[in-house]
Amino acid sequence: MYDWIIVGAGLFGAVFANEASVKGKKCLVIDKRNHIAGNMYCENIDDIWVHKYGAHIFHTNDKFIWEYVNKFAEFNNYINSPIANYDGELYNLPFNMNTFYRFWKTTDPHKVKKIIEGQREEILEAKNLEEQIISLIGTDIYRVLVKEYTEKQWGRKAVDLPANIIKRLPVRFTFDNNYFNDRYQGIPVGGYNQIIEKMLKRCDVKLNTNYISARDEYRSSAANVLFTGPIDEYFDYCYGYLEYRSLKFKSKVLNTDNYQGVAVMNFTSSAEPFTRIIEHKHFEFGSQPRTVITYEYPNEWKPGADPYYPINDEKNTILYDKYRALAQKEKNIIFGGRLGRYQYLDMDAVIRQALDLANLF
Ligand code: FAD
Image (cartoon, rainbow, N blue to C red; front, side):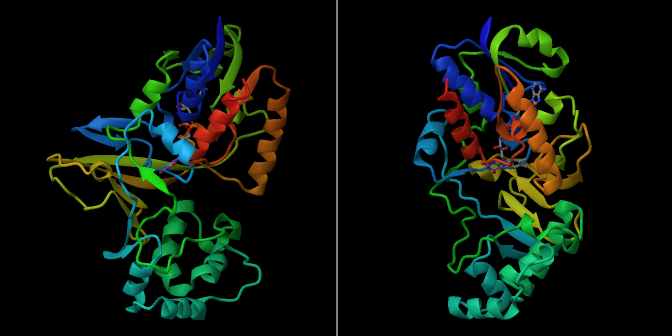
């Protein structure tokens, strides 16, 4: 008999499993995939750690979380500085003085502020995403760096998207290409899997195992369950499907040591169907003779497809609240993680939530 069955060997399940097993609890961790680490999983191809489910950059402002995660891996000093490519023209991201210089050839931050002010439309209440973004950063940047990229991402025209998808955009009036504002940032040297492996070392782990298909059997073999899979799946979609935005990845091994000179390049024009090309070796400053690149394509989500980004609009929020109400009636089962709580969470937030939960037991 186990104290806990933890469904999902992703970060949430693994942090919880680590904490519980350190306290002497007997844990079984199961995952329906054939590997641990959930969406942080890295595959080694030609000695390069490839982020299989999209680029993962660890960043946090929380010193405690940074020190916690550093107990499980050594992190390098990677700083995310993506490049935007619009029909072959390159711009620095996030929007900063380097970007503004490319548009308006001025190095004076006050002039830049005036140019943006002049292009901003005073909109009291934006009716759609296009109005919202123009009211934040004006027309030039919207046209080249935001409009077509956002439309590819969401598969809809910006005028048909709700304004509240983007509440603010990072704008800096310094020459600073560091994408994140957080104090701590890096990539684990040797990929993310080692973190999860170490967290699970005191637990029994079963892969290729779907909890839903034998839930009664698993339920009776443990006192408690932590479920980090999709909450609607747990309840057999009885109220309908929670919706997601999905992604498709296509990777290639290339016979060159350096394809694009940067880990993340965003393609902001509608001319390309993909939104980003990731060149994985640059996350770890690799010097391998070959390289692996991944094209990232936004994809409509259909039941059965990999769920990536929850769509937290009104309709889905109401649906999630109904599932949450059902979840609260369940005995000795807790729902956690990005799928269990139908919430986009960065990795640092996942660790924080899982630690807070583990502290209750
Ligand atoms: P997951 O990693 O999804 O783990 C859940 C696990 O449960 C999965 O392994 C799944 O197979 C398993 N499971 C589900 N249902 C069942 C079932 N019925 N039976 C058994 N097993 C089941 N965060 C950052 O901080 N920085 C980034 O740069 C970043 N980039 C991201 C890029 C993309 C494209 C996406 C989608 C997310 C990104 N994130 C990033 C967020 C990060 O992926 C999450 O914070 C983290 O993976 C969430 O961990 P989790 O354990 O909640 O979920």
